[in-house]
Length: 480
Image (cartoon, rainbow, N blue to C red):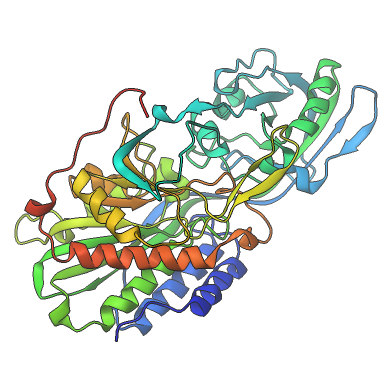
């Protein structure tokens, strides 16, 4: 009988991924992870193909921050309390030194007047916003009934997407470097966030610190003290990275179901969904073709952590893959017509958040809310049916809202393909922790999520575009 991967195998693969290291887009660890994915799929009998993409790759090597306090004390900031702003810039080994200039606490709305030859200091608050700004819950899309989704949300990912300091403006103003302060959260939450990951290379070194260190730096800036910023690394103009894909023919080679995720990421969750796709590929490859109507197309796309080069916030990187391979989905000129697409991301997330006074980052629950986009109510019903009986879930099925659809399922939805897209968003999602935060994973939940998508795909295998219906347009407005 066809089987998904065992829990022990999921653990083995998760530990393998984390041991490889941080998978910055196109770096050696990412390439090693892609090789591992390809080996696993090949061992299941798949012919793995690839698309090679060229981009400008920035990779950090070492970073440090020291400054003179308002009282004249020399402080070397602990390595745990300082991190880099991705794709900011690089320095020589000795770093750059200059007088500190405080530019305020408005993040993206910062003016850099008077920063020429100095080190700019900017605070960025983690704002709290109503969920209705980006999310629209679907009626009947909550499971279990006892789950009450939060009405407001605040996260480092959303904050840096919206109001992160614009480093290119600091460069144009003549600043030597930038120190960014993440405020409104604990130092533990702020630590080692690989954010934002949607910016182009800025050409000016920048570091992040938390609020505790940030307050001392602001005081030092107001006292006209100096600091040294070090951020060594490499910039490669014509680096390459690969998207992998493989096909499992069904009885009907004119109809497909797309099964999708991305591969680059910085910890045990971002992005571990290739493990889920390998498990699903194993299961369906072991089923006799008489039990598989549709052709399944598995894609492992690259570039999510360099959206500005491979896509953008409005067209995530799966767009490139779909544009390169209309033969898998558009139904034109003898091409397959995609009945539906499913996307998996961020499996097994437990819930962590700041305590009330933002002094510690603490565990809240064994289950982080499971955000799932459904392109219409019929797809929502398919998902809700599939999660019945699960122990580990707080499922919230969403309709894309105000032109926002987080995650790599977005391009599938925008192409008009019926879509189910799993995209949880824990506060630590982009934290480049040394151990990958693997201690935060819930493997039982991860198993259940993969099993849910097995049920979803088997249900979709019996559907057609006509039976599913058309995608609904984005919900507009601010009501959650």
